[in-house]
Image 1 (cartoon, rainbow, N blue to C red):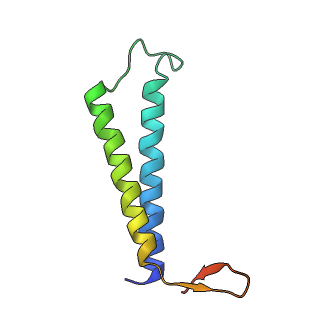
Image 2 (cartoon, rainbow, N blue to C red):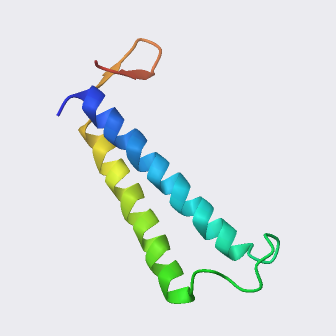
Length: 80
């Protein structure tokens, strides 16, 4: 898989994490949003958080697959 494809995959997973985290946050702040009670029960919240963690782990794995080239300033950039 090319670096460009890996970065696309990472970006997609980050968007998924952001969406899932927003849902979890809204559920935790249900009273501020006008709901009488959380709209996701505690078991499903645990599953949602586990899914977020799994996606984050997948992102770390994808970063390990990227081919980075070190520059002279102790930085690195992605080899396209």
